[in-house]
Image 1 (cartoon, one colour):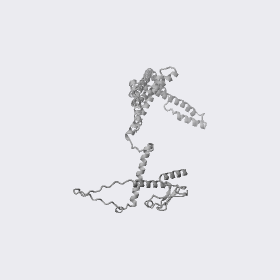
Image 2 (image 1 turned 90 degrees about the horizontal axis):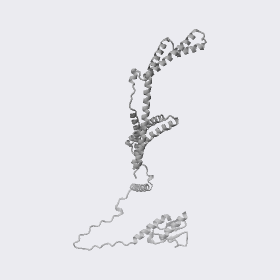
Image 3 (image 1 turned 30 degrees about the vertical axis):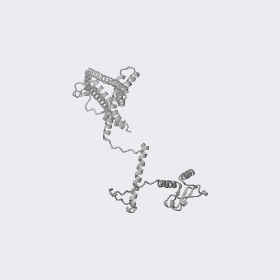
Image 4 (image 1 turned 45 degrees about the horizontal axis):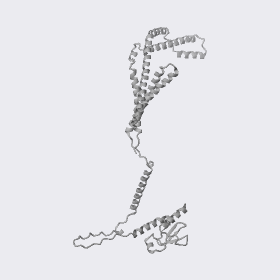
Length: 397
């Protein structure tokens, strides 16, 4: 590589007028030097070239270096000779005219001694500014060639984007929760319409699919229409409306079935109320026959365990404690039955004050179905569309 570079430099110097064949010595060539004004006027062969190592020096102006440094110096000297050979424009002679105004006074040429020399500090500042301007220019050219290398600018905090993103996530979460409820209601309603267990599960999952289509279709409708795909948008809207109608019917059937079962339970409880009341009366009468001084089951069991530990089971207090333990267990059993029967009567509306304050509100089933479907489909669609608008915009350029 070094030899090839040296050959290229010698060829360039030959093109600039250097005659390497003027000397018989291959290691050293002497040619006239035109690197300074004094050397050009003397015309001596003061420039010594060494083609084998690619160096030069002048014995008159003491300039030295490699052929790489010599080439730009020779090009500069060549340009100066060409400029000196060009003819200068003729100066117009002034013709004395009696009526012509006197020529303006010429300003004397400024000399180097008329200016105050620049300090080294000012020179350093100017050099730094020139280097900075050069660096900025190179950076601009690099950014034009490689735009991906441009440093990213830190964007300021966008409060509007943060608030809308937060609300979009809230809407999306609420919509998905409503969709889950709608899917559960559809599964229960559709699965209960078929007696076969396998077909029941298949039709139940059909209701879940309808719920998914209902809340996803409206998002697809927006996406297609926003991108000017109207045919696909209207088709997505048809699927969304079909899923919405199916989900409304399934949810309404599920709520209606629950209301029917609750009404049947009330009727059954009314029919059995007399039986329950008579049983409660009988249990209370049996409870009155148990002596009130009967100790608790836990206390009696502790007492019997202690007597068995000390080995006095043959004594009469041990046998009396066993009989009392049976009465305590019978008392607890009767109290549990009475409480359960009273709870059943109160829960089915027996006319008690507590039951009247907790009376059931029978709202229409279709109202719940419509609201649940609106929350499911529209809430999810609003959240997803907001996120698409905020984070799906194309960057300009």
